[in-house]
Amino acid sequence: MAEDGAAQSASTQAWPLPSFYFKVSVTDVGDISCSEVSGLETEYEMIEYRAGDSPIFTKQKMPGMRKASDVTLKKGVFKDDKAMWDWINSIKLNTIKRATVTISLLDESGKPVKTWELTNAWPKKITVEGFKADGNTAAIETLILAHEGVTVK
Image 1 (cartoon, rainbow, N blue to C red):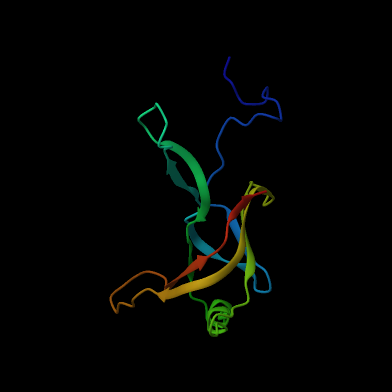
Image 2 (cartoon, rainbow, N blue to C red):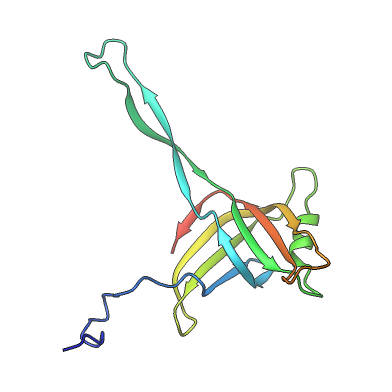
């Protein structure tokens, strides 16, 4: 008898979520239509220590400070869409309006299944990809966000 998945319980999922259906929201900016999100990672610095009177001739390794890598958003260029440019242009000497950025992986009905939240994010760099007279692609801008940590909701 063929398995059609109907016998599986609601608590188990047979397939991983597809990565192509997601939503990006920024506090005070709103939803952003992105084609790509990358850099959702957290890492801990390593502290090495060895006491001088230790009979073991190796260093102890302990977790130290947590580091958050930059997150990269790629999105199409739209005629009247300049929210990201307004956000990055609001930077003055050591002052920037920081925001919470929410990245949600959606199910087939459009409901968030898994959500990552960037704390105190701000735009570090924005780049518009080059233009080609003989090209056949959409104009894309890349936004790099610095932040102080990723939380999985």
